[in-house]
Image 1 (cartoon, rainbow, N blue to C red):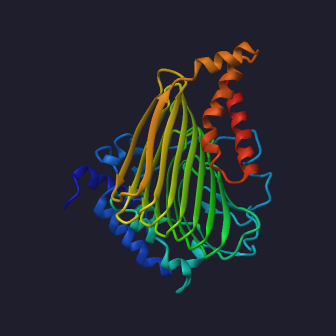
Image 2: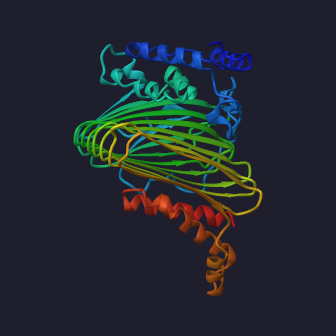
Image 3: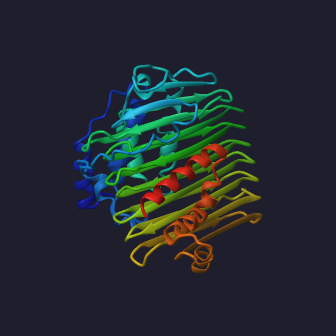
Amino acid sequence: MALPEVKQSATEARLSALSLPESGCLKAAREAALSRVQTMGLPSRRDEYWKYTKPDTLVQAEAPKAAVFHADEAPMFNAFERLNIVFVDGVFDAEASDDLSLEGVAIDRIEDICCKDIHWARDLYGVLEARGQTPVERPLAALNTAFATDGVAIRVTGKVSKPINFTYVHSDENSDAILHHVIRVETGAEVTILENGPAASRFNKCMEIDIADGGKLHLVRAQGRDHERRAATHLFARLGTESVFKSFTLTVNGVLTRNEAVIELTGDDAVAHIAGACVGDGDFHHDDTVFITHDAVNCESRQVFKKVLRNGATGVFQGKILVKEGAQKTDGYQISQSLLLDEDSQFLAKPELEIYADDVACSHGSTSGAIDEEGLFYLRSRGVPHAEATDLMTLAFLAEAVDEIEDAEIAADIVSRLEGWLARRR
């Protein structure tokens, strides 16, 4: 069926500003993704999954300008021993990055893979993204697969001794970055991935994660803190038997952020936890869209999302748990909550369950409200100033999401940053 004229025109304008990179062994995947984009068209507000979020600036031909935010603090995760991989405006910076050699893991740039005829990532690049297009179309992810100009492929073969950290640096107010990462965790292997930084004025990032039987991956992301940036991120994960995937995302600042996650539990006894916390102020729109599919026995999933909004900020949550026929003993939990610090902010939620098995324990809930006046009065009556008391209650509200971080030291660092950011907003 032909696309509507408006969507066709917008799609053609965006594609005309891009060119397919030299692809090597990834050529077929890129061309297939381009075909998906042309068939689906880029998103608009008429699309069901975009009715709460206006995608115009994410799909227009040129990226809107975004002033570079000069932070007055050390970059996230600097206190931890880690292997640091740096991208500046979406381009790998070899001088700023650490040596990519680390026991138990092999790391290659997507650019280097394109020069090889055979590479393990060829069998994964674009595969999970293509699977994630059903039953919901995700054209920005397909656009990424087709046109990503940089990124890395990580193959984990053992228990990696320290985290691998992606640092994204925004230095050009006109930058428009498209990054694609591919991660394969082999049987029994384990790794922690950290991400931090605003990346670009407009950022389109896709991460495909394939976790084999007994593998474990922990992902912690900190997005921000540029005030004017725009970002659309996609995370596609496939879990094997007794595998574990846990993800936490912190978002502060930004005009528009949409984080999509598509997770498939395909092996028995797999565990997937995905959590997020955001603090938004003023011209801030934050959208978490999650789709988790249970397609195996005795699997567990958790979705925990908390948003703190004020001065007219907007938060969106769309989360779905799909339990397929035969996926008995599924344990699926979903909670999305917002703390509205004024009457001008809003939270839009669409939680969903779709279940085709009869031996399951699934639940979802969504609430939105003001700060607890009784709790605030309790703190004030004990001498805590109003602004500080509000911050303490905000941190308590976000705690359930932060608690999903497996590493206690990383969780403590996240809380410390939140405390500092909240204090500066008083």
